Length: 323
Image 1: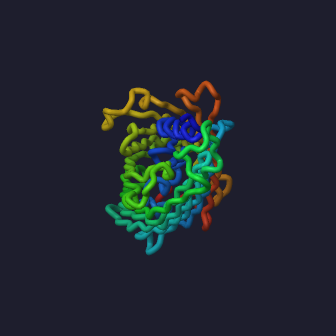
Image 2: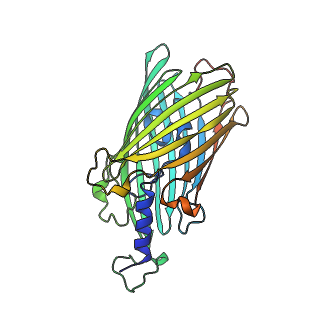
Image 3: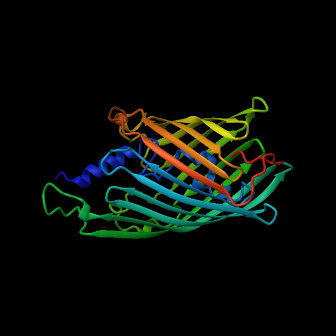
């Protein structure tokens, strides 16, 4: 039977291969390149100052049931930078489906050189998946595939990560959803499948002059049952105040040879700007444009972020927080 529920599932499948994912992959933001806590618990405490950031993403604007994601993260360092602490909250909505979660993060930071550190991080918390069957309108009623009312599932969550950095280079590897899958008795409710997620990232800061610097970076994402996703990012920093650049996203069938051919080469581009409005306040915006099947519908995405340093940010620092 064809139902609205199946239409939503198809949207989820499309969504999982277009760069920003909700289906078999966790939600991701274009501006994660300025807040590594979104993808790596080992990042906690990197900035060396108490920092809080909120990000809102509206995916596929004007598309019925389009995803909306909101997150708040905060982290700080302690014990002369040897420890990092963090907290994060997430709310992700897709039509009648909702994912919410909260995490507490701890990172132990080891100084490996005069200007290099290695963070070993772990985050623990919960994820709640829910679907409201009353929001669905099947063509044939009743439909046994649609739950009555709201159905909720709660699962524990555990993530780990390594984050290495110098004053000009960083690299990280992390694993998400390490526990809790067995508690999800109904994966039709948990649309964001609770499978292992792997993230590999690296970037470098290249000075062009005293006023202009260039930061190329990449992110590779891997999860069972989906193509390997990669982001290629290029950002320019002007006068230590304004970031301008963008990202290119695509997929490869590296490990999953059994996937359908049309699950690869789903591309997207993003234009990104972030500004230090004051010494404490950071404002960011990202505009995403699909280069896949949705490009003809002009349903693009907008992402806003606001970050705030709890203590004044100095214009010149011994170890500038580029990442």
